[in-house]
Image (tube, rainbow, N blue to C red):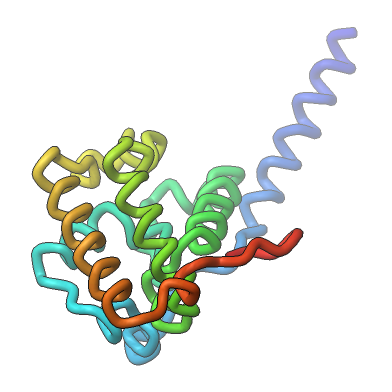
Length: 172
């Protein structure tokens, strides 16, 4: 029994070592392509807002993640990659200008809601990235900024263009 346990432990160690050589593709874009479709191309993003977004949001919600040292260790790299892929699927500030106006409007609504309800940034992210925790003032600033953009969209576009019609199995 002891030999079986030892062999299983050895096999597990070999598998863990092999896994260290298999990594997901990194979420890093060239500096030139980063701003092509960025939210700042279609809406005013003051420096104060941009700084908050960079620190608290962009690692998972843009085309450029700043990877910490522990991202080189498996299975952590896969776990981080999953968060990044899911985050970008929800809202990608680097691609915001490509969204239909209704999707932009909805995403701004969701940003307001999630920031106010402390759903973003994720607690699993802020556990290690303590500087990403939003203060009450920062939450208010982000919510007010997103609301002002929503108001400008609402004033500029017809109401029916701001409604997203749900289709089965389709991302908004």
